[in-house]
Length: 311
Image 1 (cartoon, rainbow, N blue to C red):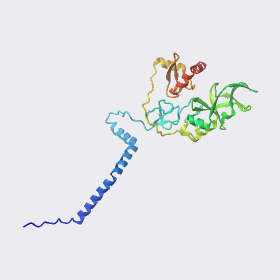
Image 2 (image 1 turned 90 degrees about the vertical axis):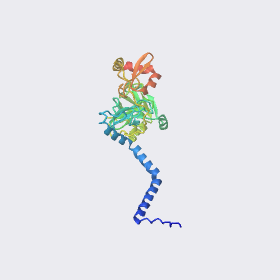
Image 3 (image 1 turned 60 degrees about the horizontal axis):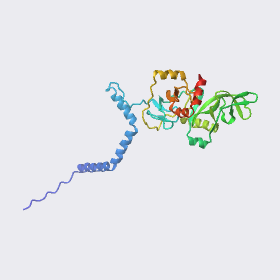
């Protein structure tokens, strides 16, 4: 005779509610598992710098004060003196001129060569689009003045308090330079101070360069005493390699002291991050940055003449 099968006792209402809640939680976990993982990943990646700074802060005492090799201060940034719009939070190489980025404090204005008010880097296609043309500054005989350097009227930007021209210091690089001019004679201005023979100035499209420095200050280098300038403090530049500044020997340092200026730009050799040695035609000279090397090798005699005139 078979034994009667006992039926399972029904769950109590309380246990049934807990079971339903647990089943619902598992369903939500399965459905939202990918979303939760993505949210956690976004939080970690998006605030990675903050987490790493906290980690360094907590572990530094345990390491005896030794800082983590990859730590970069949040108060500093890296910039390219030749390309004002290139900024980075890490040591990197400028993607435009390929020189090492130089460190500075965030928001700190850049000291430009004497007489230079601003600096603007323009890509070749933008120069072509804007119709910017340059002309070499030359001496001419002006009636009532005599022989002097002259500028066409289109090259001069009159701000009211200053008269500014944009000198092409390197291909695509324009420096705003304050000049002192004499009274206009026809379409020309005699130059009293601020320019040297052979310099190239923007004679067509100069007002567009000036407008760019004012409307888009993130591309223009800030300078002491400028009104309304603002240097960009963020960057999309990714690190390529750590910038390395070459060490100069005692003999090189002596040559730097004698030479003092860059033969290409005429700026101080330390104005662009440090002197760069170049061996050319059996002679060792120094330039202010690697971006000047192409111009120097293209016409060495012209630039050597500048050094001779500066002595």
